[in-house]
Image (cartoon, rainbow, N blue to C red; front, side, top):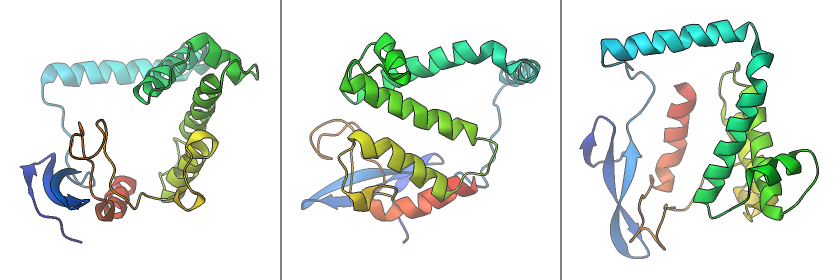
Length: 188
C-alpha cells in the first residue's frame, strides 16, 4: 500500500474515510535507517553521563531494584489513569502479591507484570511474536477484545480522545498501514 499526504520528516497526515466522513490520520515516518543524532553538545554530554551512570549501576543492579519497581508502579498507575482506570499505588502493590483489593488494582498489576516480562526480554531482538504475546497478556484479562483481535494488529480505525475520529485528539494510522509500520518498528 502506498500512502500519500503532507507532513514533515516525522510523519504525515493522510486522508481516511470513516463512516462516510472524510477525515485525516497521522502516519509516522519510518524509523529504520533514520539517523538519530543528538542536537547539541550539552545533550551529548548529558547522554554520555547517563550512559556512564547506567554502566556503573549495572555492576550493582539490585541496589536500584526497589526504586525501579516503585517508578514502574507509578508509571502504571499514571498510564491507567489516562484510560479512566483509577487505583491507588498501594492497592497495585498489594495486588502484585495476591491481595486483590479492587479489580482496577488487579488489572494494573497484571499490566505491570507484562511490562516486567517485556523488560526481561530486552536483550533479545524485538519480534512480532513478542509484541503479539504482550498484547494477548495485556488484553486478555480486561480488554474485552474478541479472541480474533488478541495478539494481532488492529484491523479497524482507532482514535484517542473524543467519541470518534471526528472529534478525536489524535487519529493514528489507518489499519492497512499498521503491518508495514510494525515491520518498520521491528526492523528498527
